[in-house]
Amino acid sequence: MKRDMDLIRAILQFAEENCKAFCRSNDHTEYPALSVSKLPEMFHLIEKSVLDEHVELAKDRKLISADYIYDLWRIRYLTWEGHDFLDSLRDK
Image (cartoon, rainbow, N blue to C red; front, side, top):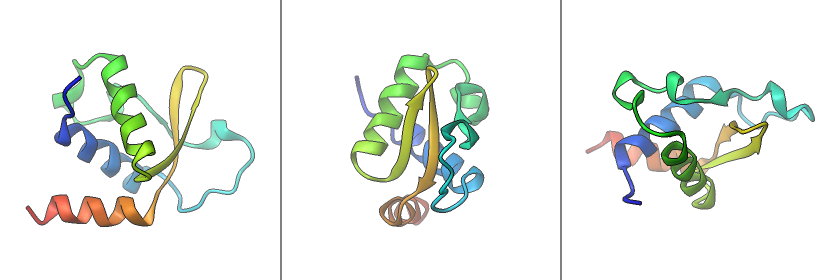
């Protein structure tokens, strides 16, 4: 798989716009679920497996806090590092 930085940016923007900082709920289903349909239209035709791999990359890099539940990624929040990384992408 080739890393798509535009997709990473879209995932981080989704987290920034839709997730409450440091959500403390024990019910993971309350976290916003990320699906292809919730990303900008340019990503609507990507495969779910590609989205899954990119969310996992962002999680592994500690850009987001997320859980994979009921076959969907549920993003808890954008981390400090995620905010910094997203800001650096905007500066370009």
